[in-house]
Length: 423
Image (cartoon, rainbow, N blue to C red; front, side, top):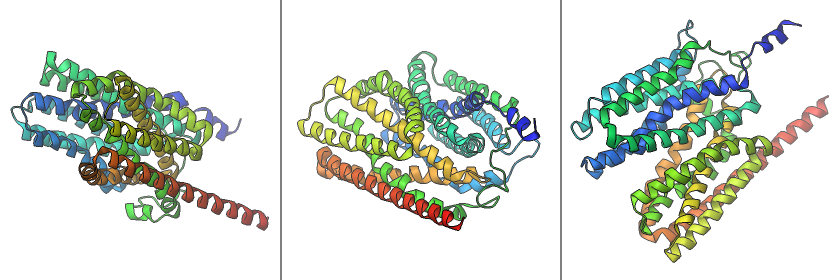
């Protein structure tokens, strides 16, 4: 048995890698699920005005801007700890410490201090996510990436269900401080697998990777493969996210109150999204990215057409509302699995953290920037007119991605023919 074979035998198993990633993603998802899922309700119950409640959603901003420090996270580390461990578990512990501090500032008593600490927590977790995504890209084989990204997407739903559902239910019994301390303990507990494991060597070394070590944001964006993949990544998803986001306000317009919508989300939509995430990973692994995207886009367009019908009639039965929101959450999980897998493929190399952060930021920024505009369109045209427009835009985005994919396919075929002719 040669040394290469011995090295391969010592590589960690897929189960170990996926379990490690699950602990790292849950470490982020549970406290953020509490912040974005439970905090708006808690604030309103304590008499905080809607302007302050709306400010909670600005805590997403660090996740959209994390690319600004991504190349720094890729370059700076402590060799004795490891390139990724140098960032991951220290930031997890800082996050736990911030949650302990937050526990002393209930929102009804000192909103400003609470908000500043939560903004710091969001920056810490967003920076941690750069290292975690880079690590996942470093260690996962190509055939393991759909499963790794299923874990990442599933962690989001688990965070919403635990942090945004179970914790909200517990709030009336335990109150602000015990729940914040419980979240701090959860973050610390999920950090332990990272602390006690030996960092796994990247599959692609510096010498084998694309680009140069320490490559910055603009250098990454100038790569030919990145330029080619951007329309495929962004065009079919930007309007799909807006289409999903606007459906819960539509249900409110039809007579559903916040309690009813919350019940539908907790009992049906979030569990469906969690289950659909793992099914999406299996489906992507079986059919490939192009067929997966076609199914996703076709479903989004059909749902937009159905929403136009519902908006026109002004009535939707409870079971249809539950089914609609469940499919929405399955679509969110599916598109995350697909998009993160595509991001990993393009970002793989010595600067995986930078590349993944840049692509994921663009993935978030485009629909975030468009949401206020589409909200205004909905005010002017009504929900029926808005979803006619969104359906057309989703179709246009799908066609852009389809044409870009076909162009890339022809380019690959031409290169293959040229290589064959030289032999």
